[in-house]
Amino acid sequence: DANLYWDNTNDRLGIGTTTPDYPLDVVGNIRTQTHLLVGGDSTSDGRIYVRLADDTTKIFISSNSSSYFNGGNVGIGTTSPSNKLTVNQGGGVRVTGITNGTYIELSGDLPGYSANQYPVIKSGGSIHFANNGKYGAYLEGSDTYFGLVDSAIATKVLIKTSGTSYFNGGNVG
Image (cartoon, rainbow, N blue to C red):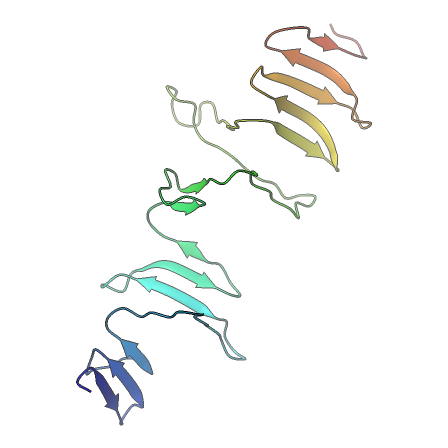
């Protein structure tokens, strides 16, 4: 077949090329109807590279080291991500395994202010801050209110944008 080339000297197969650089070198599209398996051997991990024509790696996925997407936005549950990471499908985003000394950082800039003047966390619902498995503070709902709780998860301070706010326990002064 004119599209297949076997390089006897280097034990390489070319599909769509007569100068294969790898054991299997394909110039063109590859299609599989079931699975694409990428595996390592006893000395390396499985890796997937997506590269441009100039050999710049734009996507690197590794089974045993850091992986990355370089350029553009990434979407989960959407085909049109509007940010570096856009998650859309309901159910929220859950991060587990947070241990003492580690953290999750959500940051950005408040529109109309200089960079890093007012870092923000955005949420369409509730945000809870925990300490040692207990809620320490929370922001709730469309009628935003802020609360601080004690170790028994009893609200001690409640500040509402409308309605009654209170301090429950201790001295204010």
